[in-house]
Each structure stands twice: as structure tokens, then as C-alpha cells.
Length: 162
Image (cartoon, rainbow, N blue to C red; front, side, top):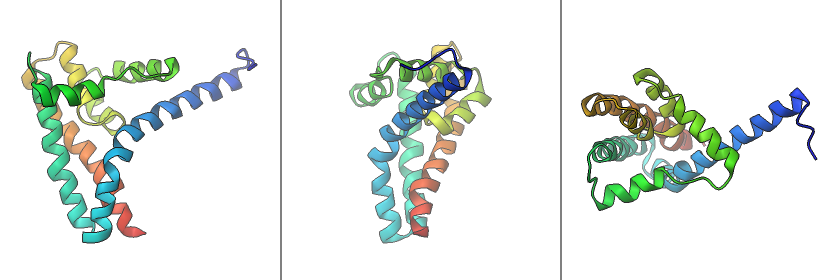
């Protein structure tokens, strides 16, 4: 049994659950799509891999945000959007993810948090909070480019250094 009254142990437990939350978010995207871009980087070179990330990720994220801000997103967008709103198995991970989502309060926090939760969720969270569609779509351009840049660095450029 863990003594939860000890402040050091409480911090370690919180750190553990935050690490688990981030790991789950990484697995959902990086381990699903990352290997394809690693392969492109190793076979064709980092320029092609980075270009491929931008060519795929920016339009795909903008498409999902645009479709996620209308009444009927369509079957394809609905399928992808439903994957983003999965209920997490562990309550602590679910709570941490909700806490991260609650930090999206405006354009700046949406862009910063896109490094952790990708480029689609922050604008959609703003949309759910009542921001205008036009504003959300403009923010989505920034969040999509920021997340694609992070993804391109990790899965397009870094594999070429090995």
C-alpha cells in the first residue's frame, strides 16, 4: 500500500500518471504513423520525409478541424474525430487528459499544447468552448504547422542521424 500522505510519494505518483498520459498520447500517433516517415527518411532521405510529413499532416489536420466544426462532419472525418475523443481506460490518465484539455483557453495555449496533444484537439476544444469557426480555423493553421514541425523533426529528420 502506498502512503499517500507523504508529499514526495504523492508527487512521484502524480509524475507517474502524467508520464503515462503523455505515453498514451505518443503511442496513439507516433507509433501508429511515425514508422512510415522513419522509413521514408532512411530510404529517400530526411528532406523527403519532412516534406511528406508536411504534405500529409497539415492538410489532414486542417481537414479534420474544418469538418469537426460543422454539424455533419461526414463519415471519414467522424471516424477520425471519434478516435481523438476515446475514453481512456485508466481514470487517472482520463483525468490528466481532461486537465490538459482544460488548459486550452485561447490561441496561445492552443498552439503551445499542440506540441503535446497534436494540432486537431486544441482548436476543437476552443470550438466547443464557443469560439467562432473562423477563429478556430485560423488557430488550426498554427496548431497544424506546429505539430507537423514537431512530428517532422522526430520522424523525418532524426532518423537520418542514425
